[in-house]
Structure formats: structure tokens, C-alpha cells
Length: 198
Image 1 (cartoon, one colour):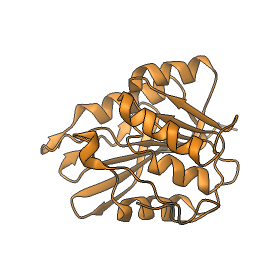
Image 2 (tube, one colour):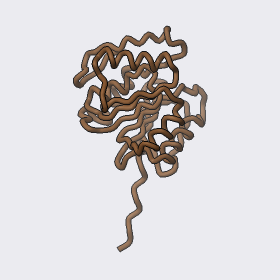
Image 3 (cartoon, one colour):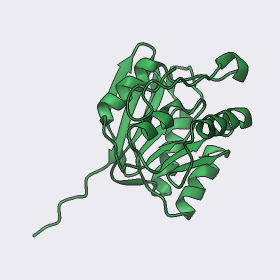
């Protein structure tokens, strides 16, 4: 897998899926589709990659100018891979944060630090079942409860095409949904504020 564009364009991310057991990485087609939707120049936008795995989505965001970029991966070996790769590339500093926590703990920490994000990418381990997959509802609910999405921000869920996602999650609403083979991307934003009466 490679970085598509930006200042790290062409860099190889040498993540060996076999080495990391049940690791499931975002296909290049999905990554390209994601960034074609949210835009190429993301300078100054904040990005949370909540289930980082290989780190490639967060790295793509970093390459395109996002800052800060938060990588969270609960599996220690994958976390060490991301940390080591960024160190090898000299990508360290205030604009990059790495955490080795379960998603819920990471979200609580982000809330306690007063952090909110322009983009939150969610690619938890797939539930390859038809119908509702509770993990997406639960995580979106925590994002809403901890107020992690900035005004005008977008939470993007990568999921198995046959999973059914909710139209709303608290104040978040589904605004776009796109399918790519057996994968799909769902885009959630804050519901618009009701117009005040004159």
C-alpha cells in the first residue's frame, strides 16, 4: 500500500497482513474514494483515525495536510508498527498523536482534552452479517455523547455492504452512502440547527 498524494506521496507502507493475524486493511479503492469525497487539500483540518490498524488512512490524511492527526490502535503490535514507521519517516511532533487504547477509552480521553475533529474515520473489525451491526451504532453514539465532531465535521464509517446502519445517531445524521464491491462508506454530519423564529 502506498500514500496516494500530498507531501508523502509514493511512500510505501510495508504492512504485512499475515504478520498481524486477523488484520483487515482498507482497500486502496476505498481509501481513494474516501479522500475524493472529503477533498485533496485538508490543510489544518483535524483527523481522528479511531481503529488505525496499519495507519494508512491517518497517514494519507497527514500527507494531505491534516493537523492534528490522531492514530488509535488497541492491538499493541499494530500500534508499534505505526509508531515505528512514523519515526522512521521523521513524522513526529505536536500535530501527530498516537494511542494504544480501546476505542471507548480513546474517545473519553479526547473529550477530557477538549479535542474535536473535522473528520473521524471509523473502520472497526467488520461484522459480516446482514442487518444491524451494533458496533457502529455504539461508536457513533459515543462520538455524539462526547461531542467529538467539530461543527461542519464529518464522521465516516467503513462497513460491510450488508450491514444496516442507522439514519441518525443522536444529533448525527446520515448524509451520504456509497458502495464499492462488498464495502461501503457512510458519512454522518451534525443535524442542522432548527431555524429560530423571528
